[in-house]
Length: 96
Image (cartoon, rainbow, N blue to C red):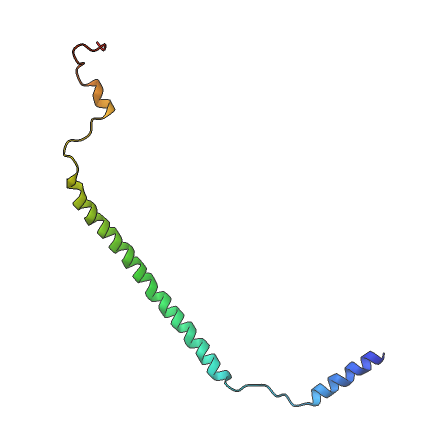
């Protein structure tokens, strides 16, 4: 019972004391948070087109550099296994 009386007295004292909130600079901090969020949104909007442009540029560069490397290969295509049946047997071989 004694504990309840002490709590009641503390609550009564707290209700009588004026509220002193530290509101200095609250508006400035809110505007800073809003500006920070807007900057992050704008940077995210700029980042996606830049990323897509980089991917397209790398793809086009790969096509052009691959096209330049293609003529360096031999002109005759390699002999495939399926074409071996068409060739005549060599003289002196065991194949009929």
